[in-house]
Image (cartoon, rainbow, N blue to C red):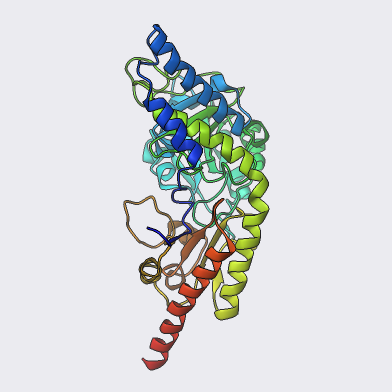
Length: 390
């Protein structure tokens, strides 16, 4: 893998050295964190330290951090009618936008007929007015309205930032519960659960340089009832997620959270690198189309296409040239298919089919951008020659 350029941080960020050290330390211990003897207490202390570290990243109380297996489990756990109303009456619904992550769009434990999908505009931002109209109609037409809204803070494909605090104002006015998928935003922009106004927040370790297979569900101060557990048994994790804790993963997640919080100071560098990449692409391909570049977005994410080019062809060619990027999202078992996010934004199918995502991280450099531009330019030139000869 020496000499390769990695520009796919939104899929998985490389494990930080601090993460690896924390995982190794945890693996050297033995004892169950639920045991009362010295060995168990030592492991428990490691878990609780990580809980505090993750809580600090999002301005939460450590007592409100529930460790899970990742962002998907956190999202599915959050999306339950029981989290809205303990009696789970008929008529409980969940509002979400078409641009959400597949783990949210899968409805969690809501029945498909209880899901109310909200559109997005051409910049990839949830239609706030449509959401408010839908909530108003639901509350007007039901005697005891109960509902949840799920909205991501940052889109994983385009990087577009969603107006979560504005959504929170509407949700709280009507007495609903707000879940925020914060997986892509954590470590890239400031993420404070109180400022967002969310009742529940999802996080994932491997997106911030932690281990795979670890995540968290974070509760706001005013979310008084524990989430309805997806996994039951021994009652670990505040009785919200049973099973012996993934101690090594949790320790690595905590260490990565500390680094991610510290690294927020370096995000201006990534903005400069991303903007330079986009300018270089436009200089070589004036017909290139960039998505969500006219709205507030993550500092590290560029999503673009050149009409006529196919994403899978570009990704494979870049890989052969030693550069790793994604075609849209990388959460669908390796599949390369048309982006549901771009479809929701109204992007024509032919244009959406060629979209690739370049996502930078803390180790990205000017040299990485140079290598990407050189490799991509060669692909683009060959494409232009083939089209001219056809």
